[in-house]
Length: 63
Length: 153
Image (cartoon, rainbow over all chains, first blue to last red; front, top):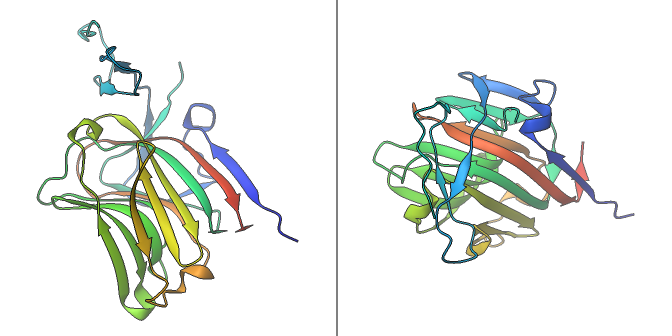
């Protein structure tokens, strides 16, 4: 019988779950990151990254 | 909002699940355009057997790779890296089928890695989600979705 399996891994809900992941080298961390769509001229997904660490210094682009 | 990305900075991790075939979507932020000395991989890999299907940044090259280290064989297909992908959350998708893998970036088909004629052992060897960033910068990994896995344990 052909039984297909699917799953979703979502860091926002699960973080870095060491029951599911094995770190082979270095260390894996987590971060809260916000991306903004600075191009409103089309409907394509088009993001520009902001700083990894949000602070009062972050300047958000305007459309 | 809680932390929503895994951060790989000179780090490497493998998922414990072993899978055969299926479709894998990974939201990844490659921080910079491929540059000399860069080393990044993400996709499916069995490290102890060196068998895998993955996206790779090696120096200035971005490519899809199918490898079978036991047979010392590798099939690669270069993918032109769009500068807009650097520093942005982009969907990278691998469709692992019999004899080949279809690779998509940003929802557009970019390459077919055909390993049917090279007799790679990818049809039967289970592989795991794998992420490696050999650079000292922050490569981010968001949600990962796996669909239609033929066999999973």
